[in-house]
Length: 101
Image (tube, rainbow, N blue to C red; front, side, top):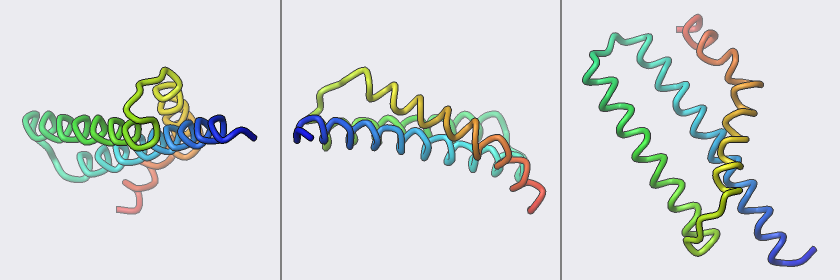
């Protein structure tokens, strides 16, 4: 396989992994919110920090793997990773975590 194509495949898989990780972290945040009562301000602040850190992670991914070039398949990979997580593991994660706590 061509090195350039192999690099693009690794970049796409890293974007998918980032999408899975982002969905998992947000589910952990959802468990935290349900277990501990949160005010509207606290929820808004948590969401702001989450999206800020996710934006930094996406920027770092594009900068390190792709020299800062924005490509559509980066966002497609992140969305695909999030969807795969939600359809498989994420469907049950919050419910079972709350039952365990």
